[in-house]
Length: 190
Image (cartoon, rainbow, N blue to C red; front, side, top):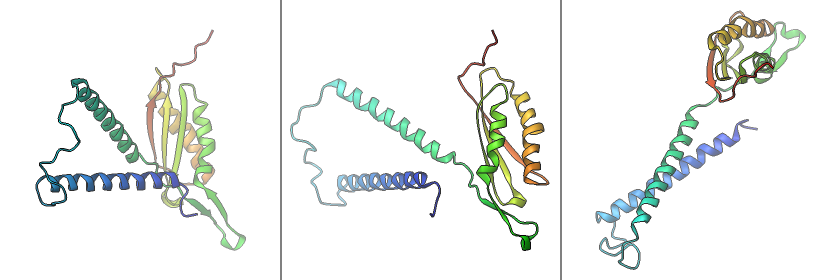
């Protein structure tokens, strides 16, 4: 298997294909209009009939184009927010006695469960990237409305990350935490 993230690769390939087709179509239209290509006569009508469509058609087309453009922009921005690539670590302090392989995503599972158990956290995801000697932990935490982000960050940095660092036997583990506020209201005690 060449990649564990095949849908993202397909997504980018389709984006590139659609972009190339649109670009080629635009170049064809411009070259035809300015007479560089003499495939079509620029004076010929595009569609049969000479009557203009009703005014509401222009508004519908403009609204559809704006909506399509905003959706395409959202899709493009989503492509930029990619998750760092994780690796499988080779843990061997004494190679003559064998080695242990650890998938970095598996190592972050208990950390995510611990963070999600904290009051004020709706969801969490973690990614451990890099080699063992220069590993970096990326956390994305969905915090409930009204949650104290300073307290959440302190609990993550003082409790959860040191436990992961100790479990992986790392001297240091730099981490980046991104908070995303969710619409979920905190649970109320009755």
